[in-house]
Length: 130
Image (cartoon, rainbow, N blue to C red; front, side, top):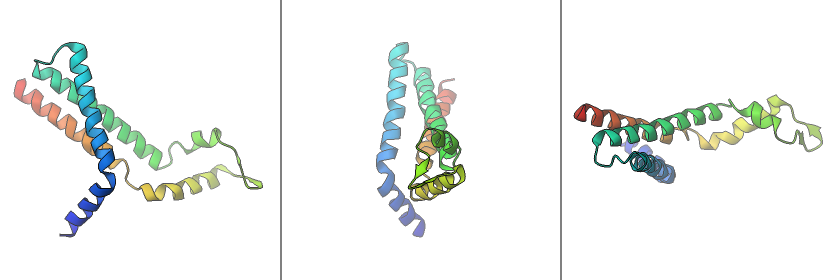
């Protein structure tokens, strides 16, 4: 029973991101089919779903890298180096950003999960049609 409470709490807090990811994947599929004039072919739906799922999955991987501090050095280069009256070092900046990112733990799961589901549906359509 505890598992369903955790999942329910997660969905209650992240439903907007999940819906936005699903809408993004569907819009990419429709744009792909519209540009290739392939609304009548199942393989076009498979390709469109795969493109939408792959971009969501890759965006999720970039979010993972960002969550673990992979882009801190780039953001440090483009910000003001002074905090208060002293110059903030890269280590201090990274530690501060790590603390700021704590409340948004596992924000990348939404993108990875929806992207994986879209790619699995794409492969299923491909197996059925192919």
